[in-house]
Image 1 (tube, rainbow, N blue to C red):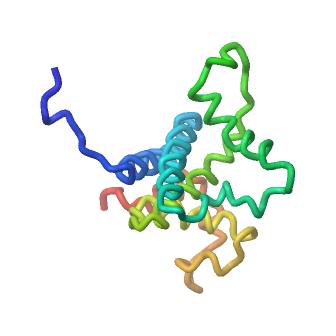
Image 2: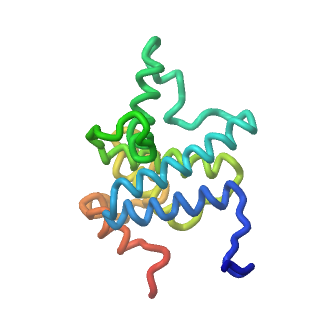
Image 3: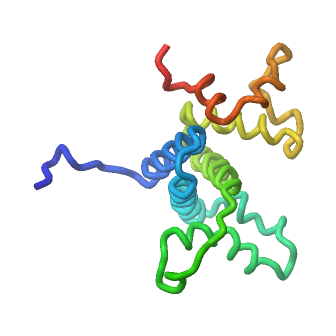
Length: 176
């Protein structure tokens, strides 16, 4: 029997924050990629709904101006393919799915950006993930995307760390 001490009162932003942070911890610690992706995409969908309700810009992965005209349906099918395979079995119960685990990082990034866009403050884990993302993808974003680095930072050494090593080095939750 459940009592009042076993209940949580949550907002949609609370739910998204919890999902994002758990996905980030799994991702950094190289935990189960299916669970990390499912959590990240769940948060992403919650935040997308909140953005739509507030008539805000769509999440980055839904930004239509970057999608070739006529390819919108195929693009959205591909974006949702892994998440749909992980949570549904009505039409594909006996099929196999080839999951590109690298897409999870981008789903987490998009969720983190939308969390902030909705007026919430990044948590330490979100800021750390964001820092790693920009550091890892500087060729995409440019050197101006890593404002947390100063001239003395050993950028190449940081880039050479595995995700797990990076997380252990910078983890805001680790004990001193």
